[in-house]
Image (cartoon, rainbow, N blue to C red; front, top):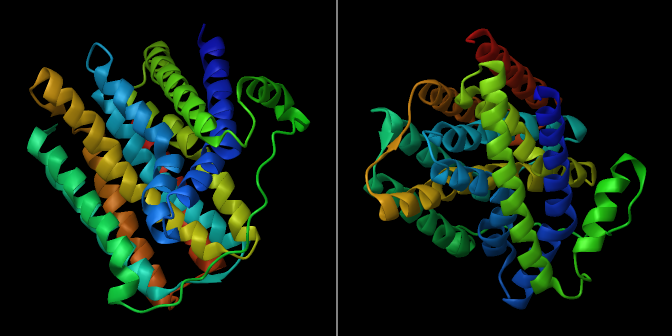
Amino acid sequence: MIILSILALLACFILLARVVDLFFISSLDKISKDLRLSSDAAGATLMAVGSSAPELFVALFAVIKPGEHQAIGIGSIVGSAIFNLLVIVGASALVRKATLTKSPVIRDLIFYSLSVALLVFFIWDGKLEMWETGVFLAVYVLYVIAVVYWRKWFKYDDKQSDEEEEPECNPKGILAPFDHVLCFIFPKPKRYYLVFFVSIVLIAALSWALVELAVVISHELNIPEAIIALTVLAIGTSIPDLFSSLIVARQGRGEMAVSNAIGSNIFDILVGLGLPFILVMLISGGTIEAGGNLLGSSLILSGSVLLLIVLLLVQRWKVGKITGVVLLVTYLAYVMYEILKL
């Protein structure tokens, strides 16, 4: 039973990565062009939704599932944030050196530091209340406003990337069986609004399956659900982010990889936690239980933010091999810490 559950979990991760990479992000990009959104505004809204949709749906299904499974939702968000910051930024830095534009990075680090500080402060007492989740959503609205107007307030050059090659539904390699299934399900790329809708449905279904499988595996192996969420689920739901960031880093756009990782984390914490939890509390009332392993990992996340800021200041806003090695070693130490706590 446990082997089948693990294999099913892996299959869900692969399908999730392919849906996001091949269909969801592509349809969002076209929709943002239809809406004539600037690259900054599109990145902070639609593209953030695209890369963070798995974490958002995992959190939503974790809190609405009967029983006390809130730790899975919060754990997957916190764990993904740690993975994005340390592994995605670290791996992208190893792939290719990049010099970051100071102004937008400072903006994102300010809001990210605020998001992490709010997370630690709100779960310090072991629970989340409705007004606290409302604050999360309000801060994200402020972030989107700041993104839209930041270039007007603080002048800087916007490094526009070359037009990317659109991902094709062309099954090949070891992932061909998964791609064949998805190519059959999805409509043609030109019907991108329908592609967007089908993507949402599939991401929601796969996220529900991930929550169910995480509960089964944690019970079978007698491992706390929070630990499964902080490690296995967090890594799995961040795989699409990792692949896309490594691709753009290899193309010489490491700055985009770094900003995407930080921007996704802002969305994960403020909306990925705020939206599902406020919906549940509006329906059922009460509070959301949190704390324990999650508080410790949230403190580790705040330390990771400080580490990245220090590295950027020391390296003068450049990310390269030193930054990459330090961040990746830190993540390995974090995983070992969580394993040794069992």
